[in-house]
Each structure stands twice: as structure tokens, then as C-alpha cells.
Length: 141
Image (cartoon, rainbow, N blue to C red; front, side):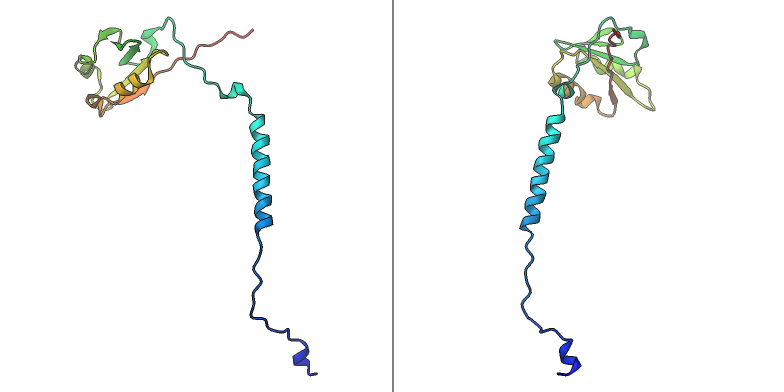
């Protein structure tokens, strides 16, 4: 036998397909175990939302112009009662020309739909709207 024939391997025209099913099953099982373990570590207290509470507001320390929104569509602009129709005429002289901005403080019992419909009013387009929130600090025991 010549040295050239000893070192050559027989050529096969068939390629062996690789099987990834075991790897895929292992990855899926690891993901399932991960989500089972991490889901049980979350406490229910972490999933709650603390709603803002407001009482005895010092209105003079809040940003201006400030629109207070109360339950029943009661509106006050800088402490003066306004209606939905008179809001823009009362607001226009209070806005700065270079950066028109309106701050809104809504009561926690105001329906979200009412707040969203107020923000999306077409006559308030071009005015930057910022929601004002207050945090009620709890005394440490």
C-alpha cells in the first residue's frame, strides 16, 4: 500500500444532520425553572400602587399656573373657579410666551378618563402640561 492511500479517509457524500432537540429541551426547562423561582420571590406588597393623597395644600408654594381638578369636573385655576369653556381665556394671560406650561393637580378620586380628556383638549395643544403630585410623608415610628 502506498503512503498516499494510507492517509486518506474514504469520502462520503452523505452529511449527518445535527440534532438540537435535547439542547432546546434543556433551555426550555431552564427558562421554566427560572420563571418559577423568580416569580415566587416577588412579594405582593411590591405589586401595589400607593395613590397620592392631598390635604391642606399650601397653594402658594405650588408651580403656576396651576389647575386644580376636583371630582365632578370642578376646576380652579390658581384658586379661582373656572369652567371647561372659560379655561382657555383665563389661562392665556398667565402663560409665558416662550414656554407655555400648565400644571395640573388632580384629586385622587377624579376618574382617569376625565383627566385624559382634559389633557387631550384641542384648545390646549401647544401648551406643555405637567402633572403635579404630592407625597404624604408618614411619621417614623
